[in-house]
Length: 140
Figure (cartoon, rainbow, N blue to C red):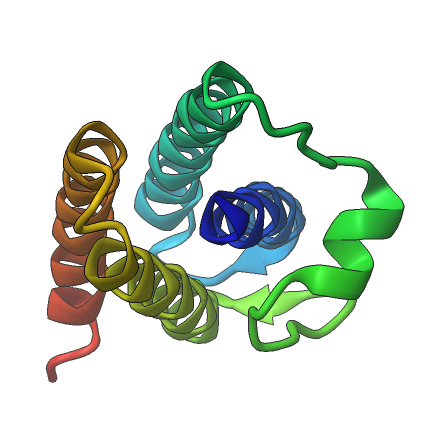
């Protein structure tokens, strides 16, 4: 199922972007944002493993190499270097939203594969919870 490969590279990309933000976040809310980013990264890593294992179970090879992730991910870019805490939250929220959108596409495309669809629904639900918590911080 090709949609699983797409979701995999987005999840790996999300974990990498999250760590980049984690290392470079600065500001008055540093500690809470720093820790929250790691929660998203941990989820993305766990979800990527589930997605890859589902694809392999279905007989499909996956490609989670840096080259594949760099070429195939659908995430918005993030800056290099230091990032203000509020900007880090916004950037991470935008990346999570991109993965949620890709996941929703796969949910719609996997009607004939209910086990895959159920797995992706679970992943999207978890990511939507992270997205809610991130977006809630941006309300002033």
